[in-house]
Length: 433
Image (cartoon, rainbow, N blue to C red; front, side):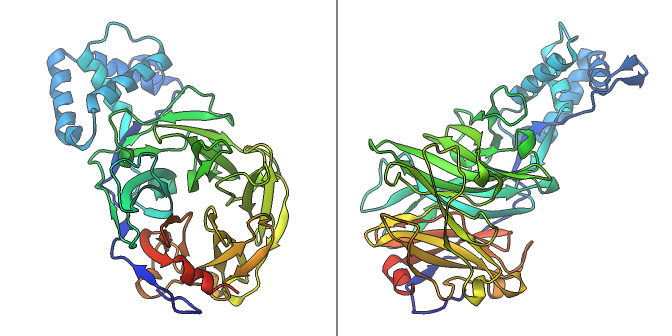
């Protein structure tokens, strides 16, 4: 990996996360509910399937359910409980299944479930924040939570997580993934544009939870979550994260809110800036207002302020494309971090041949609309083995974390994988002009 300007103390790690078709979850399998003629009369496909299963003898039902178990039972957590939940959903939909045995109910639920490989196509564009539970760490180490954009069948993007611990020396360790992944469960909702709450199961570790699209505005993906640990004026800490909701036609900016990564509120943003990708929040209020960096003209960085973290409108242009490596367009690479010198923000720039590279900018602490220094050359560009992938010639991140005098930066490679670097802050600042 190449970088320009002054030589920096930059460490590249061998750890690399790739697409993994074996990471699957059980999800509802939707079957058309339009009534049609069948051997049992005029009924929906759901009714036809359920009726055929109910007519099985106990022995026939148990034999086929055992066959399903043989194929799938060891691949998922609480398979039978999920089948029963799905049966109850189907019963509510059809409204005419009473006195069904438990085995028949499970088998009906199995017909309305399917495996979904949520990370079969790609893992990319991570963000990283300190873990809400820092017990047991010492010597300046920091536990962390890392979010990732995972892409599966149909190019549907979801949000998944990994946990780990980083040290001041620049080293880090990712904790092992749970063998089972579980889709976060959503509260009742109307499927439209209102806030939605999802929860991970109490027995599931964070690395085993996947947040899937829920509303119509999200149906084709939850993309590029930019997490930040936000500190209120009274010292309370929350986790906020902006992301892109993609309907398949339109994009909109939404916000994830959580306290301990067990319950997540997903809320659409309002205002002119909500129609643009890549809004990143500052980690605290400045002069009594929420602040963000966004891109309102598709090519430049803007400083935005708001009294309501869910409403973002217009802002002040901070900087635009200037150097050759960013001449097409530029944007942020996640939330800034606060230093004595000012606000350090990672940026991405798009140059010739649509190559994405990463740089940085230092903003004035009391007025982040003013630039103190910026990268003349990128410090991270695609080269060699990191050039090829689903979308070639791209390095990109949605966040960094400070540990002592260094930054840990996970980043996406060619929209296909995630790699990691550690950079000394003083060295990065010395390259800004």
